[in-house]
Length: 348
Image (cartoon, rainbow, N blue to C red; front, side, top):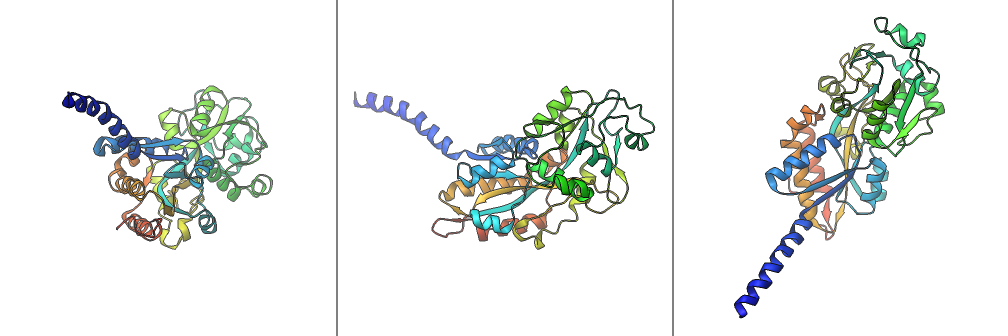
């Protein structure tokens, strides 16, 4: 009888214990939608090879920063780099994970990806509501071979706090003094025109729905949704296609060793092959970890992503960080991310 009771209790408690262990092993992250296409593939593959679950919610950079400050996630994703004084104030560690490009996307009848050309000035004036129709002479001058309609332009922009918006408005602020003065550069701005949508997914969806519209998304969203993108004239006066090569050309200007707290903005970089709207996406973690085992599991995932996830990143047209930058970052982990008692969590 005792053996029967023991067998029944074991049958009941083992599944419960297993669920508790698996729940504890889940790594939770939230934030930027910019890198989500890559992070979602990484988490799927990582579980396949390690059986460790990583759950990442694409909720926008602002919401991700709020959650990591509140310690409700193990890490946050943000396309907005925090200044060193902000990192110190919030007791956070920041490091870059990937580099990617933001592209203007359009819904114009008969226009295929790469058909439309936009100068920096025209792009800014569309978003300033100074150019309001696709038949405007300023657009036509760069697109003599296109039969552009006499149609109203509908601007689609992010309405949530967004690192993608931060990168996009940083670029507009650099190439348009009027934009800098009237609107500026931030995760959320007072848009002069347009309709709002949440996350990159929302902007892509609205542009697909509205004929004559223009928006901005991370490049992978344009590819995945088969949305036409425009070519942009870069700082050296060349019209370039957005792709891994042109994103890499811009990213190669980054000197991470000289960037305090890894603070770096990569928009409007020089070079004939550089795509002009490029940005790094960052990870934020707490400096002092109350659960060192969970923190180590989190860092092991990022180490795997840096070293084993590069091919996934390239296929989605993100730019992986070079080995020299990875060594620099992992040394930073060792020095800065510690258990509550001061012990190191990561050993390089």
